[in-house]
Length: 399
Image (cartoon, rainbow, N blue to C red; front, side):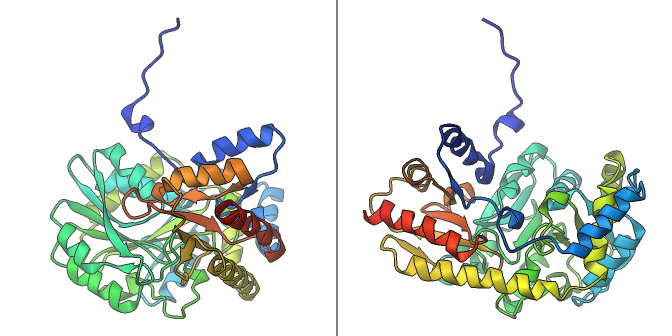
């Protein structure tokens, strides 16, 4: 028998529920079954939500002109300036030097965690949340502690839970707004209350994950950085969700540091950025076109997403065994499983997949404590496509 090389505990502990559930789905597809995939938030996997043509043209132009070389490690200057202008338009003074372009928001998180976290430090993140907020901090000896979102109040922030869990070891306090997976949109009052709590902990920085901010349906979304006059905020955003180009892998972090507390950390971040060279040059040109040219197309995309969300909510209301809080933004539903036969949300999801070939994601993959008993589904397919999985889910639960 060949002796196996041990895997690191870091790698062995990684879970990414959104993609992990694809493994059994692929096996079923190999057997000839057609799987309806509602697991991943990729707008281009469905009809009617294309990447804008002028962005694609700018990407192609960069390729045609051989603009394929290494770019500046912090991002193309024109793109950094366009991002700074966009963020300034949200209500806070952002300069080109405050912006760093990355391989998507996920790389931005990896770099932030590497610069902020050490053994014994903590990240305080909402429960439920996007899985990397739990997976990545442990690579640096840190732990993620979840604060509660209230499922009976539109997944609002449980401020008392944050107060109870804050201490001097918390280096990063995360706000995902709109939230993935729940779709809740934090109010200005909630954001201000979080700053009031964080103000007592000078080593704490706010991560503002706003990748879905262009898909706000409440009309009340605020830029988190715009609410701070002292507590440092790192705003995260990119091209994937609101500009409908997830495969380009272009994101950014914009640093709002009113009192200048983060100079040493920023030096570390810049060292890390230089060490990994740069983000994709032609993709940056595509994103630049999205920021500086016509944005009127977004209203049509947003309207289609909202129409599909509304349809999904109506279907859920008709199915005994499911409940759901209406989301304020993004394009997911985080559905509560009230089916009494459900042993666990993960087993329920796997049974649905194997018996009816519909793929969703178990809620415990977004938080073992606060996501259990739920599943997340994507509401991006056209309504005539969405009808079929809902018919199958109803049959699965009610026969």
